Image (cartoon, rainbow, N blue to C red; front, side, top):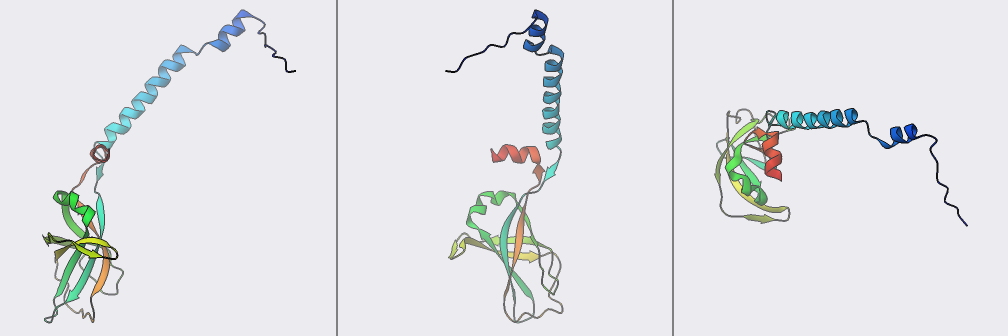
Length: 160
């Protein structure tokens, strides 16, 4: 049989010290935590954030030697179409392609493939990249659609 033993404290002073939370520590602790949270929220209102959406870009060469860029925009990204700014290419190819492309016309039709649903877009390079490049066949490379820049706080609020 188990006995419940109560621990007896020897004096009333010891019981008071153990039983009370020091009010100074409680008050200043809550103040410090509150100010820290306010500081983080305040800083996030000024820190810029530029979200991006993954996509693919197909590079072809026409008969005159000019490079043509076609973007494959994921169907679910079209909800953010108003925030589209430009396209960044991250190419690990042996030849240099323009790093930034402007979005041209985006098709209303959806292209279905085994990889998903896509909207096609013509992409316009900021600088001519056709010189000294010969493509035997089209090349597909990864890219990102850069969205409108906003603060971290605004992005968090939108995400909720």
